[in-house]
Image (tube, rainbow, N blue to C red; front, side, top):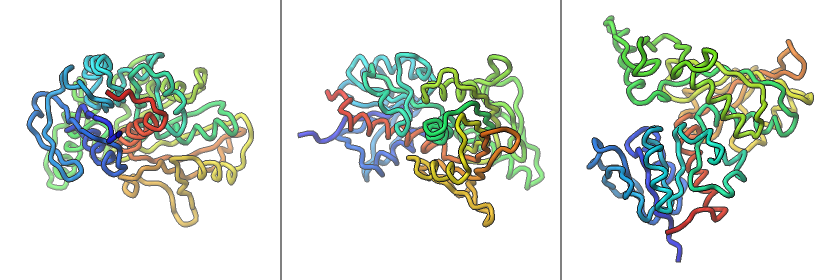
Length: 348
């Protein structure tokens, strides 16, 4: 009798790993055995799952013997090294890093949008970038209903997207400001950058390194991953990614130009019926999505839905989603649930 899957979490002590633990328990994912894996420095730490304390082990190739599903969230270099080793041992890998996302042989999946891409997988499924997941849940129903000519995005991304050290730095800088102390920035825009800038009471228009045409890697992720998830390789889309002094939840200002005409009321109804999306839009009562209210929520929230009066068939939208939850851990678990539903997990 099937009692559940043998599951591993790689990067179990990180923010996404800990969120995965919560969500797997909350959603009663069928687990018969859970193995927590991380780097050598985390070995021996104990984390709670379903009322039981589990000890963290070092992630090694042999750690995946007998494992059915492994959730990876320990960085691209770890995934590059260990994901193929896991697959060799019969494990299906759901990878939360950017390493495999644009590999043509690896499905890049948001289950509410393109779950059919899981069919025929070769052992590795990629979880998209957090901002990509959040905006694509809104773009997908628009694309299906009216087609999309062009998308212009500006993201307002929380410091938790840069990890625990960035969150601690924002906290410290605010406290130092209130106390009248100076605070030397060390983390943002990213730890190994030549220069660092304060994030408290500031905006930093750089997330990750600069790449092609002076766009950052984060901006290109959104462009290229959205094209792959939506099966629109020629989609006209551009993005500007900004780090803001918010602890959790990414926000996105989106300008979308459709092929077919839509009325605002029709667009609101369309989005309200889309899976994983909640419309929060009542300007007269000052109701709109905000990060402080939406941390820990599963859905992506959209408001400020209005016509762009400067162009035909244009709309402006404001989108907010918890990037650690739906933007990472929840989407990964939903991929696992869909694999289970379709019978696509190879059980050892």
